[in-house]
Structure formats: C-alpha cells, structure tokens
Image (tube, rainbow, N blue to C red; front, side):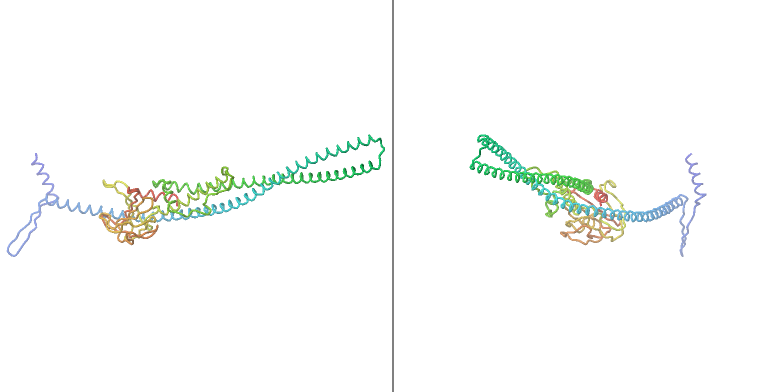
Length: 438
C-alpha cells in the first residue's frame, strides 16, 4: 500500500517537476547535477515562502506608512483643538482673575465705607444717649420748678386772705417782689421748655438719621452678600478643578500645599487675613466669609505655584504619536510612555527642577533625570543629544535633549517616566489631569 502511494506521489511530482539535469562541462571532463522532483518541490516551496513573506512585509510597511500619516494628521488636529481650548480656558481664567481682583477692590471699598458708617452710627448713638439724659434732667428740673411755683402761689393766696385785703406798703412791695420772682421763674420755665422741645426735636432727628443709616446698612449688607456670593462661586470654580487635578495625579493636596507654603514667603497685601477689632468678641459673619475667601485665594495661589513645580506638561511639542503606554508589555513592566517622532525632535522639561543625571545609562541610552519638588522625578530616555548637565537647574518648557534611538530601542522615540517617591506612575495621569484644567 505504501509503495503504491509512493509511486502515485512520485508520478504526480514527475508531472509538475520532471527530473532535470544540469551539465557542467570542462576541457577534459563532463559532469551533471541531477535535480529530483522532491528537490525541485523543496526549492519551489522555499522560493514561494520568501516571495510571500516579501509581499506581506511590503503591504504591512505600506499600511503602517499610510496609518502613520493618518495618525500625524489626527495628532495635528487634536493639537489644534487642544491649543484652541487652552487659549479659551486661559482667557476665561484671566477674566475670572480680573473679576476677582475687581470684586476684591469693591469689597475693600465697601469695608472702608461700612467702617465710616459704623463710626458715624456710634457717634450718633452717643449723642442720642446724651440727649436722652439731658431731657431727663430738664424734665426733673421742670417738675421741681413747677412744684415750687405752685407752692409760692399757695403761699401768696394764704397771705392775701389773712390780711383781708388790707395791704400795707411793705406787703405791696413784698407782692411786687414775689411777682418779679414769679416772672423770672416763668421766663426760666419758658426757656427750659424751649430747650426741652429743641432737645426732643434733635432726638427725633437723631432717631430718623439712625433709621436711615440702618436702612443704608441693610442695603450694604445685601450688596456684600451679592459680592461674597460671586467671590465664593469664583473661588469654587477656580480651586476645585485644581484640587481634582492634583488628587488625580496621586498627590496629597494638604501635604503639597504645606510644602509650597514653607518655601514661599510671598503672602501679604490682599491675601492677609482681615483683623477687624471686635472689642474682644467673636469675628462678624462678614469678616469670617472674607477671611474664607482670602484663604481660598491663598490656596489658589499655592496651587498655581505647585502646578508650575509638578510635571503637568508634555515633553514633546511637535508632531508625534503614542507607541507604547504604561503597563505590562512582552511579559515585562513598561514603566513609562513612549512618544514616537522625528529624529532630533526637541524634548522639553515638564516642570521646574534640578538635573540629577545626564549621560549614558545601559538600556535607557542617553538619559536625563530631573528631580522636582514633592518627591517627583521625571526621566527622558533614548535621546540622540543632551543639552543639560548634572546639577543644572531647569525650568518648565526648557529644551533638555533631542529625540533619538540610543540604548535598548527599536526605533526613534522618547521613553518618558514619572516617579513619585521612587515608584513609577503612569505619566498620562499627569498629562490628562493637566488637559482637564488648562
């Protein structure tokens, strides 16, 4: 059975691959090489595989080239959209900052006006109390004088009745003196009554002035409420996205702000908490709200400083594409994100910091390490050139290297790492967090 199968297989091969001989002739001898059907089949199969592999590889390269072009166009469109959004957000942020400054100026002016009105109100209240005391004294004096007048009249009546109308010249003189005394007392009473009426009128005017000032105070309180509400809303809109950005980046916001506050002595002026005298009592509600807003402004300022000192930026600015992300790759942990671009493309520092390494590092090739605040370190690997030295202080956006293919690399790209406390963190957390805010 096997023989028959072999015969049939050999006949089939003979049909498509008949035996051939290649003659090799020399001056003295003639030789030949016999190509059996099986040998021809193996050669044909090998050549077919090589041709097929060449066609498939060429197609893959063409598709990859076409896809790269599409990726570049998409990256350019995304970059334009991102820049437009960034410009819009920057304009809105500037507008909010301007509104906050104007509101702060209005608030300071209102506080000064309120302070003046409070002083006037206290002075008016003091005058009113003095007038009330004066009125009480005048009323007591008036009652006493009226009693004395009535008593003098009673005495005159009794004396007249006792003499039965026979008045001597001395009595007449006494009556005349008493009449003069009564006239003097009556005039004094009239003056006292006029002063009393004037004091009462002044008191009414003071009360009316106090009511008017109380109404103005209510209007000012309503204006303060509107100003405080707008300022609080503006602070919420400004601070919450920054707080969310830092939390997404895996940073403890309280520790971060304390670190920035220790190294920053620029607090003062409008950010100084209000210290309004309360005569030993608790601060007013407006003072507490104003201090809360100033604390939020201080927090916003500290966040601004922290954002400048943390790597919330992309290391490349030109046309690029992401080729490999953070995570497991080929059975190993890939501790960064790869940005593929043109050879020699500039690479920029993503935050302020100090260069701790600038040179060759085994698989990284030409490597730059930058130490930032808050225990954050960034690494830029596979560079073709380095533009910084160890110990050099760099700023965000400063060119530090050029993209290359050094070290353990399969093509021109940047390997970018972010480490917090020595632990690798996905760099896209920082990049995406910054895109959501800026």
